[in-house]
Image (tube, rainbow, N blue to C red; front, side, top):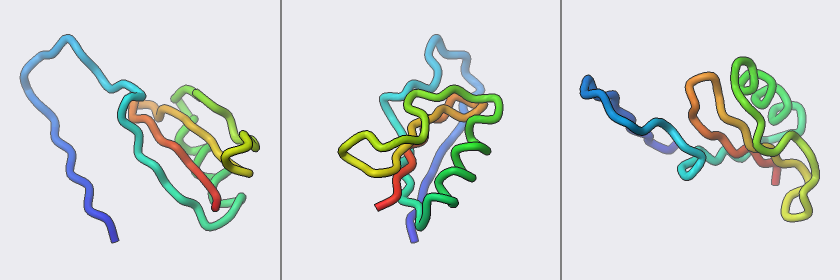
Length: 75
């Protein structure tokens, strides 16, 4: 039920994506989080692998192959 808008620019810039902006996704189950994490990690980079970090029993933070940052959580 959320809208998200993104754009590309033909102008060359000196900057790229950074983890300063992340898409936060609440998953319905551990299986859903692990599947999403695996797909996003393919060609990407893990900031925080799937684990219990105290603030969440199951959380992960990953950049996808395009450099977009994703935080995944199971409530």
